[in-house]
Length: 617
Ligand code: FHN
Image (cartoon, rainbow, N blue to C red; front, side, top):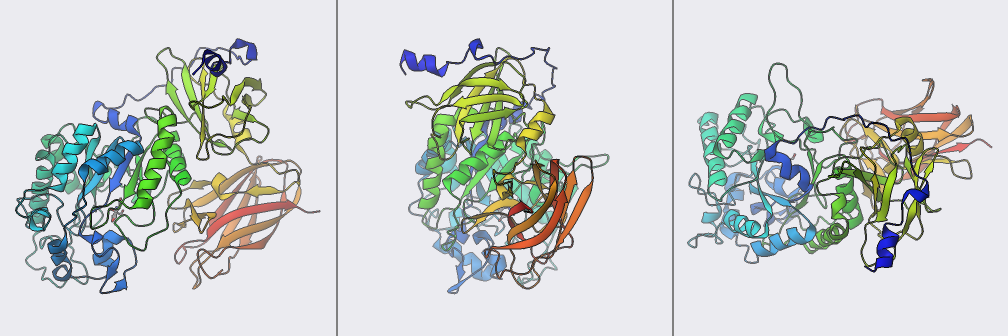
């Protein structure tokens, strides 16, 4: 980079006039991360790998497609162990290449991986003295000593990638595991769950001691009643004793609150587990310092390989999920499902490489950062990094580029010391920053330079100070020049777990809304009080799948106005329709709209798209 360019990068000095009161910074207590988990709390991005015998049928059994995720084919296909388990005689992934897999992890910017050593089907992807239902009993491992865990662990260590083992407690193979699946006709009278626990402990001991130091143990399948809190405590303590440096997720015990994944409180005791595990969703807000969590997500719809699963998330969605997770102080565990030959699907590899390219330029705004200091940002996300000199780097991840080139950082009170775009060998796009009544405005002097997210580093003096009221006001949606308020799904926040932003054939919506206790919230500002017509765009499958909702408009003075909306079927969860949903008299100023289910839905409330509020002529 030429001297001139460096000067341009550091263009911003006191002359820009952005300075503010340099009050003594309140010493906000920062939880010192436990030494064991500190590396993980900085890593931010890992690769999940679901691989096993289920990759052979790949979602098809007896020539017919089996619904649901690929690794659950025994369940969804009601396949008895005697029919399923001979698959091991066909498991011969001749194209499995641990070096190539680890190389892709590196290229993707993943700092660790977690692979299924044993999923619910009970098959051990490793050589086990406790079972002959293992890799040693397959054409891949028979007579040659090959071991998937061994090859991956060795390759990962050579590459400096941390190692995680997924291990399912639930086991559809072992005769002592209870409860039996409904279709499993093996007698259960002789089943001894204590004997199963000894088997489980024996295999956990193997995966923790046979492959060198293991960084993460990722349990799953803890939800059935036969597994108790006492069993979870015993297993957690066993793992800590065998391998003190290994971090263990909260699915070892019984405290995980469903798919939202965080650990419940307990009177007089506590549920074990070092980090929470939201699944297929990212918490609406952060969980505060010292609360460790990781959102795990598929790249398409299935964890295990399924031939027909082509509902791939875009690379932009995946990059923005990573940013969103980091902006809330969590990690992103993104899944790949290799096929029976040991190949990672091309669509997965393509997306992972796109993420790696983005991280190669912008990684400093993700790795080792802390959560955003802003409640919400209308144009994107933010992360922070406390610098050695006590100042703070605030990273601005811009998803929606401001047309006027003025990016408001709402409510920020600190003096800005420098501002620059994170990019290399490209024209500088940041012209400085100036103070505004609502915070700091970053001046951008060119078009957006990255379709996924443009990142700007803004260094401020001391610890960030944010006027929460100004930040809230600035983050709210405002009407366009036509006076219409357009409330987009991507700008909503979700209260409660379950619903999440998704796309159905390109239509962004809040989907997976199976939890009637969860609400969708839009926050906006009404410039002109008056009557507004309400239009809702949504999709709803037939057969009373959904639920009526109440549109609850709450003004700044606490006054509420409720509008009932009874959605009719649109024919499918992907068939969107825009309907008139009534009228509402709105006050000027800040208004919160909560979309509140009125009954438990059949499958899900609705797939909620944009809501439009149009002033009566
Ligand atoms: O049942 C498993 C599922 O197959 C998959 O492994 C996910 C990944 O976290 N965990 C369970 C569902 O919550």
